[in-house]
Amino acid sequence: MSKLLSREHRADSTVRARGGASAFAARLGRALLRFVLLLLAASVIIFVLLRAVPGDPARVALGVSATDEAVAELSHRLGTDRPLVVQYLDWVGGMLTGNFGISMASGTELAPVVAERAGASLTLTVIAMVCSLAIAVPAGTYLARRRGHADAALINALTQVGIVVPSFLVGILAVACFSVRLGWLPANGWGTPSHIVLPVFALTLVQASILTRYVRAAISEELTKDYVRTARASGASVSTALARHALRNAALPVLTVTGVQLSTLIVGAVVIERVFAVPGLGSMLIDAVSTRDLTAVQTVMMCIVAFTLAVNLAVDVSYAAIDPRTRQAGRPGRFA
Image (cartoon, rainbow, N blue to C red):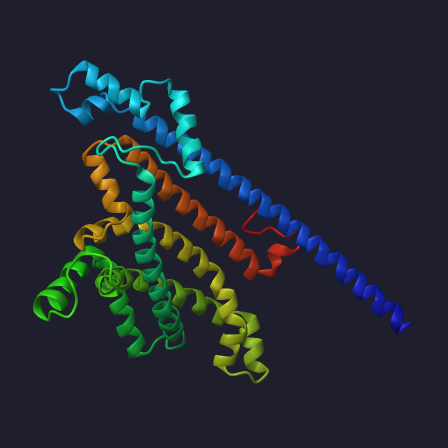
């Protein structure tokens, strides 16, 4: 009898596992489809809005004194004299194959420039986010455990200051202190590890302050739930209950906020790139707008949108990996 029950239990577990895996695969497929559709919709919106800007891009690039023949030749070379549908399809096809087109301002290929600038922006953004999490998780956990104490109130006040002070002001003060006054680090430029320190510091200070408050709120909420009280009643210490149970559950809302902050960080890094003369996508976008380089503008904007959507997709997948309930059939999750 016991063997029969054991076999039925194993069979039932296998069926549930297969059902959960198939449900997860279906939700993942829907998330990928949503990613592709949003990317397509963004490309259409960006292309239409930029083409709605009045004036001939070729005329703007050559100047008002250019002859009609020169303008027509440049329009033909850039492809702006073709129908809009053909221009859009060529642009999307080029983006998919790595051919981003030719800059209207400089006449050079955009692909190597975008790749180089994207590398600088991603390096700056990812390092700043990793440093922010390395500070926010232990700091937020400490604040949640020390709630009501004087030291926690002091750290809370410091995080509030970090949120209020803009990152560009932190960057300017950091340059004045560590570059001009002390001479420890370069004030601007890119290419060596020392050039990364001050921009990362300026971005990390603000992001760490924001994430610390989210981590504190998430862990404080988990510590008041029944399963933590049950673990404590069973003899587990606060640290044990926190490490084994609360941190995993608190990671779900923090992960969502981290994804949002990572998406906004690459856009917010535009000012920091200007302050420290970092050759990133943000500075490239500003330069392209000032010279009305429509090809560069739409390419950089599309890269930023693709990065944002990719981060959201990664958060969805990570959310499902952390929360087992999203892998069970019939349970609503982030993919639903």
